[in-house]
Amino acid sequence: MTIPAPGAIDCDIHPALPGTHVLVPYLDDYWRAHVKMRGLDRDNYNASAFPPNAPINARPDWRPPKGFPGSDLTTLQTQALDAFQTRYAICNVLHGSPAIFSEDLSAAFCRAINDWISKEWLDRDERLRASIVVPMHSPDLAAKEIERCAADPRFVQVLVWEMTELPLGRRLNWPMLRAAEQADLPIGVHAGSSYRHPPTNLGWPSYYLEDYVSWSTGFAGVLNSLISEGAFVEFPRLKIVLMESGVTWLPAWMWRANKTWRGVRAEVPWLDKSPADYAREHVRLTIQPFDTPPKTEQLLKIIEEIDCEDMLLFSTDYPHWHFDGTDALPDGLPERLLRKIQVENPLKTYTRLKP
Amino acid sequence: MARHVVATVDEIARGTCKIVTVSGREIGVYNVHGEYYALINRCPHEGAALCLGPIMGRFESSRPGEYSLSHEGEMLRCPWHGWEFDIKTGQSWCHPDSVKARTYKVEVVAGETLAKGPFVAETVPVTIEQNYVVVEL
Image (cartoon, rainbow over all chains, first blue to last red; front, side):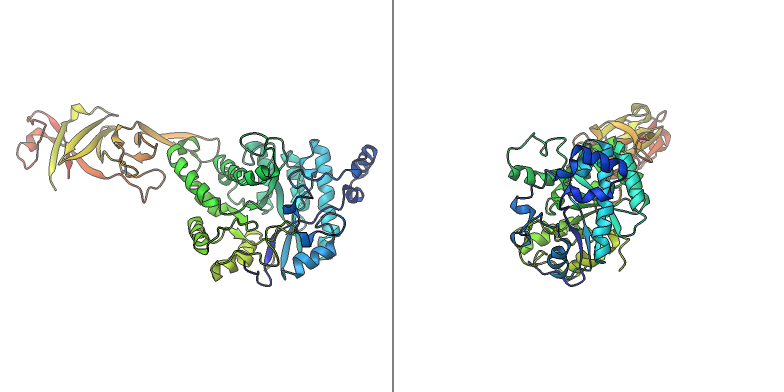
């Protein structure tokens, strides 16, 4: 593995809420009273997709003696920012709030998370940027929250999960996509599910192994949906960042999507280029995990098949465990591509980041 | 390059195709709104008998949820994998610049002119009263 160069832009790190109680001061009077009355502040609302004790969800040396990994600013500064000499790092809070069934409670908690990350994290370290957490099952409320937070240029992205109630490209979700496009914010689609449906196409899996490994097919589904529904035709400036998706499944998806499109394209006549070309133009992927093959020549073949140097974005996925030490990049990538992955591509994707 | 008489104009009604063999090559001769066009009967993708595919229009859209059908009778859909081709140009819909079916020049010639030659009338007997479809290859 390769150590990132100083000044790289880390497009996926995960500060964690120490507990839902920290949001109480950020709720308005009504929701503070409501949450207190129901005792919701004593519930952690951990996202089921990220069981805190699963080894993959915190590297052993990044697991604090107490509290959730990623919940302490000083520790995160040392381990995620100083250790990699990061220029910017984009905070993606993975908390259950965006998936709460009550749309209004979900929206209230999401507003509180955005105000909390802004005050408790972004105000305290100028290297940090954040994604806007939204009630992702309520596109109208999500759009309102995007508009509210977009005023703060330190919010550089909208965060949703890969598997939600509806495929992301469905027209019901368009108010959210429209708001993101209008604010020039990419939509970051992070691994994980709100478990409204089984996370595999086959039904409910028995083990975390099945669950986690299946997620790359969920990401392919996100692309299928966004492209087929014509989201990139309707919103030509929309950018999508797939986070923690793995990378090496992509060429196989490109090949299969293009092949099928050539035969059935009349079903989706708004597409004026191939699915892979839409992906190359609108879709970016963070590089942890990469799912790197064992040999460099295999890796280079995959890069060649992707056939686009703009798609990959540096990430550590801190504190999740995909690599050890500071070797956060796959070995064998050409120097020019490495530079693009670490700096140029993130700056082009997140236009709110100042070079 | 020779000119081959392949049909009388009456044989190929509007919106239909006649498959002929010229110099050992199968060619589909189409009547599109009264104009004649010829395509090789072989899909550039996997070699299917392209001209056995249905004749259609152009399915297009300016944005999701809006549909328009135009150029009725000018498109051909390969019977194997559904790739669409423009009968007039041989261009595929998906990759118009790189994937094309070979086309041939076609003209309608009066029997009177044909009688003077030089034309190859392999299978079609020529009379001076008729008009003929002539393919060049």
